Length: 216
Length: 221
Image (tube, rainbow over all chains, first blue to last red):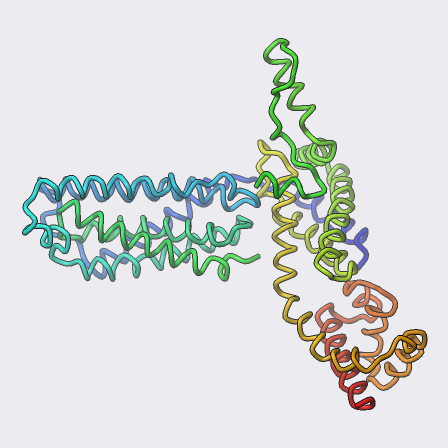
């Protein structure tokens, strides 16, 4: 086909549907919300709600876990909306996206520093570190799929590694919200290591899968 | 991305600072500095695209035409530098125009337009080079025998030889190779001429060249 013919064709297509609304943040935010609903449903159906979640210490730690996940997820959506546009990777600062991890790690360090060394193992590994390690990445598959679909559908990322990493980060954060409703461990070091670690793992998986899944 | 975008034929807009502007009214200075720093390509393309997105189909067509010629220059320059035929450039121009059309909603109207176009053009170029690399890398290995046994004097007869060799191929492969390699058409144009799909043309050319290389190697060795 001659390029001029193609331009004519695209011009006619434009006449039929001249303006497409943008709203990248809204669309991706919506996808993350749908993924979050899926993750919550999955966590409650498979793992179940923690008994006595609404009492003192468990409630306090639920709020802490949710705040961590919300900070990570919020930054992930913010940067994902940028990286989903061509050339948007220049406006993405992965260092800022890592800030919540740094803050929680610092809090964990401070908390451990106030305790005798003998308690450290219990503080870090908690009751169910293995369950956390397995659950968060597995639950994250649902939001990961939804957000990947949305980026493919509405976006056009030109840095697929970063875009994939941010999809993984958002999915991990949303998954952590779901798992926190079941999680029995109430220590800051546990959250730093197992929540932070598994979300980082999801991010890494996203960075590896991005170039394959997000190609356009 | 600063230095990278600057290498693009469309100069980056809106990034230069207003350092050397004489002191004037603050607002006027800011505005004029912005306009002075913005490249002509940025101003033209952005104006057309913004008008298009406001609903003007005429401006949109004009935008695509101007964009097409910028992209052609960009891809030809890049492909020559990486040792590719510039007929591939037209395929890339068309593909990029198509994705810019289908992904036009990813343009953020508050941002300059040339970095957006550059990012897409560069992405498609890298994608293209990556996916044709293996095919391109195959050819020299098979051609090595041909290259080594041919002397300089053979070049003068080459077009005759090409016709003779092409006659050995099935009609489909012969036409595909003649269109793309002898007449210099792009894959898309060759596909239109033969009434075949682009993929079918590429496959025919690939298989035909392979068969030819074999044939030439066989008769000479």
